[in-house]
Length: 229
Image 1 (cartoon, rainbow, N blue to C red):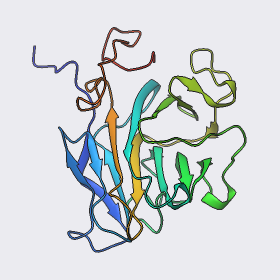
Image 2 (image 1 turned 90 degrees about the horizontal axis):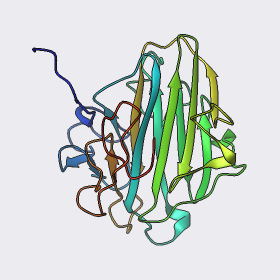
Image 3 (image 1 turned 135 degrees about the vertical axis):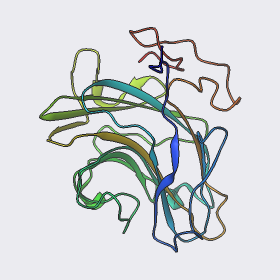
């Protein structure tokens, strides 16, 4: 009876990175630490999740709320997963580091998948942009030696990916990392509205009251999602 069940991840206010000054430039977390609002203009700010997964199949959702700014080309943000034993996990010279990060990145308006590499080398093939209100689907499968990640938009995975069958992952990476940790990062340009995003790890199917709540549980009957895990 002392074993907690139905625990869901949130963003962690104690685990963040910034290119600005710590304590001054940091993501503002609200709505149960599921809404991420960028804090200081001209800096990258990244928030990591409170839970990591060592093995298994996992799914979460990210809704882009605001941040179109002066032009779509000014957007710069990323969402995905990180390897906890990456040598640069606690540093931030960019939105995500080159090593051990696997993300959907909107790079100055160009949508791409960046996996264990610099964002200039990320793949744009079959990856589409998102607008305010779109939901990004992130599914990943972790074994002792391998990580596969699928990214989708509004319930359709890029490049005919299918996490249920294991087909066409956006990321197929050999790894010995202990934990895979979801994370999100925003940059804010001068004159741009504050970038905002909300996450659902199973406990936020209405995305902080913005949508009719999703009703899709996982195969264990846990959580509620907008799209089927």
